[in-house]
Amino acid sequence: MPARAWAEHGRAHAERADALTAVWREAHERGAKHAIEDFLFTYYPTRAGQLRRWHPGPGVVLEATADDEQHGWRWYRTVGLPDGGTGVTLDVAAFLAERGDAVRYVRGLVGATAGRPGAFGCFGLHEWAMVYRDAAVARDHRHPLPLRLGHAGTDAVVEGHRITCSHFDAYRFFTPEAREANQLRPTRERQPAMEQPGCLHANMDLYKWALKLGPAVPGELLLDCFELAREIRYTDMAASPYEVSAYGVEAVAIETAEGKAEYVRRQRVFAERAQALRHRLTAVCDVLVGVAGGAEPVSAPGTR
Image 1 (tube, rainbow, N blue to C red):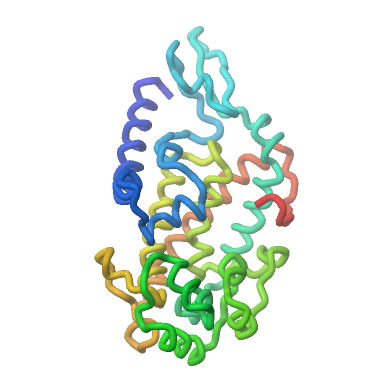
Image 2: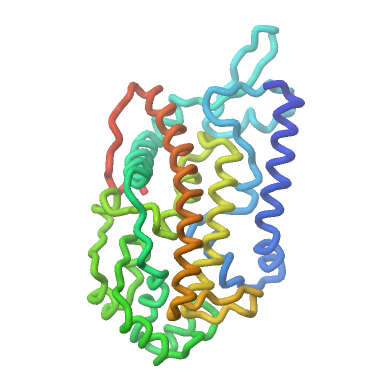
């Protein structure tokens, strides 16, 4: 790719990243908490600057100039060009030497999830289960927001519904009473066998897996995953027990029939978008694993 062309890709990517992170960066620069967007930078530990860096993905050689910073990027190598110049490209062998197990784990998990039907009857009750019958101080300080229905009202919603959370990384934050009430028993070891594409958190996690694959993920795919995660996060909190009106967000009142219908409508849209991203992520993994000799995906939880 000629230097002028990839420089333009990089500029457009950085501008898109800046637009997607503008709300969080403004709050962060003021030293303020953002109860909705902080999650995208704390639970998924990354930096806004990391999102601004464009990568072309494996198999693309970027025409280099003397002062290109790409020469110093991790997992890149310099190659000669037919015209006598030099270029830089992802060193797939070096990347796989360090991240091969992670690549195969992501391929196994994301591919298995893509092959399952979505479940759309959880109504986002995972956030409610995280504060069910908990001490008042702990409940109100999980997020710096009051409970929309109060303590008793929140508990009543949980007690009036079946809890069917399949996502381990949500389930592990449930209160002890809520864990007992959950109809499923997700574990880290069973995660590749239990993730399903209707789950909002499994769909947000595509951003995590894109980050895990680092420079092997083309920039557009990384930001597509981040953009989806950000939109889902707003719905996740709108449907939560917290009062989010201070952020200009209208509650999705899942304790009502109308709220349930709205939640499922959004859930299905997110699931469709997430499935397309899963196919793109698995395609990246297949290219990388193919270079490694076609090793089969693994499901070791320690690669997270």
